Length: 244
Image 1 (cartoon, rainbow, N blue to C red):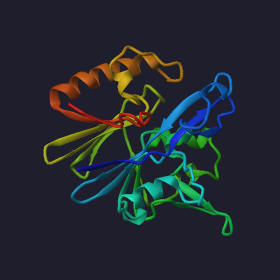
Image 2: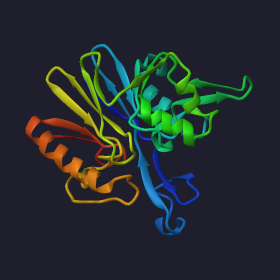
Image 3: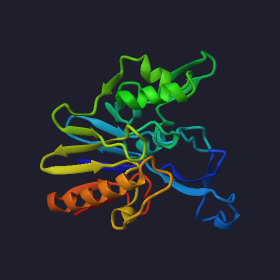
Image 4: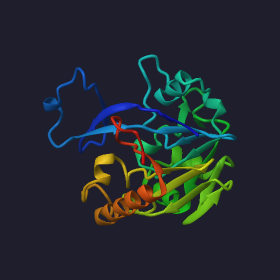
């Protein structure tokens, strides 16, 4: 397997829930809004023998030329976005799902940013998003497209991707294991967002169930060490990939 981090960069977010680009080389961390968080956002691409997989889709951030950053990252690695065959979604918070689709302002329609891919979304997670989100957003498109595969509590996709709803960060957050040729890659999304959190007993206030997240991280870290997992960290640009 080939693993490609698709970093959108760093952003600040405060109570307005707006993600503001933050350049660590130029911007002053002390000048950010009081109470704001600094968040690094990094989807992944995994190239297997038969698939090109994107895991979570980022914010949908566009660069100075108006190109989706996740598309540009793929192109920089020799991959055309139309070649992506699967998009795995851990949960539907904006920083993980904002790149699912875009709007054609002339046609007033939304379209998938990976037009030839199947999207895998948990049934209960989508139901919650439809109840609390904007009905004209990505969520409505997900609910009404034959490109979307609705997942349950746990299962296997094409005999090499295992998924499981673990909750923790959001009530129906799902995680993924991808296995090929003896290699096992684990994506824990926002339940396991950074390598440092795997090594400490952190209970985060922004999690739906912070204690459960902490316990799952400890469990996965021990199991990953025993079974030689490769971990992917969505909110850790410095250490996006870690293998035992």
